[in-house]
Image (cartoon, rainbow, N blue to C red):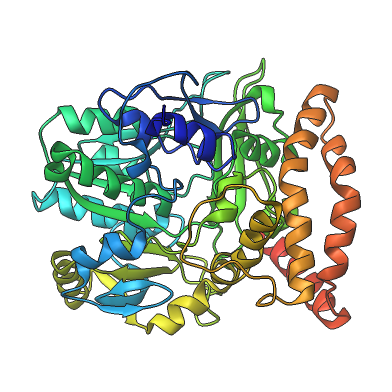
Length: 470
């Protein structure tokens, strides 16, 4: 008897460690799947391996390799109105800028655009609710610190501002959207938005109710241990952690320095600790404490969304501590709203080209549009299943040095999960560093920094320290 779609999903995506934990499969009617945090702090789908349930889960899973890819999803939505770029997909307009009115920019991680768009759509009556991530403050031990929620007021939308480098899943909120009439905007990372778009092709209720999709440009999805690791380094032990802010803005300090703010419970009451910037605490490029599925994603900006938002990592904007957003608009109605607000001075936006958008996310495009070819090649060489992607598997298209970097990253990610658990068991953060040290020494050699750059970096850190301690 041939395997059902549910059995195939278990045998390929889930057992192959490609599940991103989005919850799309579990949101479907009559699905046998459910989503839960696993032992390393990732949301993962699971079901009875013998389940004979018939449910089109392969059509909604963003990593199944079945069904429409990003180009096929986006073309009927935007192909008639937009230009096309091989890197960012369809685009009606591209900008760099920020919200000039109110406190949106100050309270956001970057230029405040995601919250502004959601509030604007609500105020105009174009949506009734927003599906987005919110903190569960105060967090309860053993429960997630952030969850997907349905916001139905401006106050609730504003409370969800800022980036959350933390795992979430959508099954419950998507079931709520499917069962509760209204018009919804969904805010999520590219693979989550792809899953939502695929669900709308399977569920007429969601097709009718999902009015807008907003994608946040994503580097990698983290486990719960990432938040614990960051907090631990600024003085809050994982067992006492109650809340965390991953990107606290500090006036006079460039926006690309992510300052961590963690709150821990103590006998005397809550204690807030503000630590060093993210670059002093963590090597983002090493891929520590992330989902393996992120290694096999080729959508950097969220090509299936009506609008994509990220950070403007461009020399012109890096010195601005207020934060600047990259905006890729594909939806005509959103374009009209944004252009009107720009003309009224409510938004400060500079038109840019798709090429500049790519430059702003250069590391992400290198990782997921170029070097993914080598990671796919390794899977094919090993003779194991992997998702079908828009990038062809190849080793020759990646330099020897970059292949070595990829080899080390593919070792660092799984080892980081083991290392952090050992540190938790030992009660010493240093154990985490000790376990990873041999690989990071090799990694550092490949990223050898010239003396002049080290001197400039040291001088800047000293300057930044004087600002912080005024």
